[in-house]
Image (tube, rainbow, N blue to C red; front, side, top):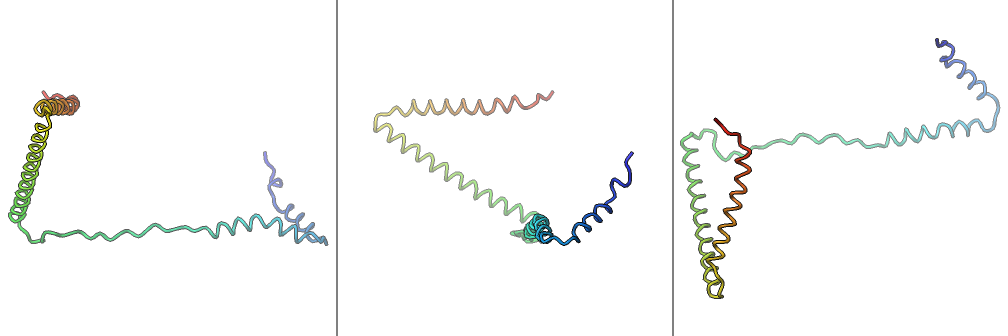
Length: 144
């Protein structure tokens, strides 16, 4: 199908060498001009910077509890934190209640119907809670 002589580079190389040996004043400039694109590509590729991936960071774990701490000590500490959290939430609720009372007093002093506003707010909050809980209930499968 394909002849071996068709893919043989030897005749081409011999032909090139035969033409290159002839005394021609342009042979070196032509040779340099033909090598210039390949030289530029090699120069460009050799100047390309490749950055290595960064080193893996060393992980330092925060150790707030001693290693020899018992379960009872951990539970007692968690209970202290929970009591502190509950106290803070109670104080926030108290401050919020005082703010609401101040705004009610201010509203009544300026002639605003505060009770109607509170009813509207309660109705809206109930509707929002119902809307928020109904998709969640619809998404849950019925267990039988």
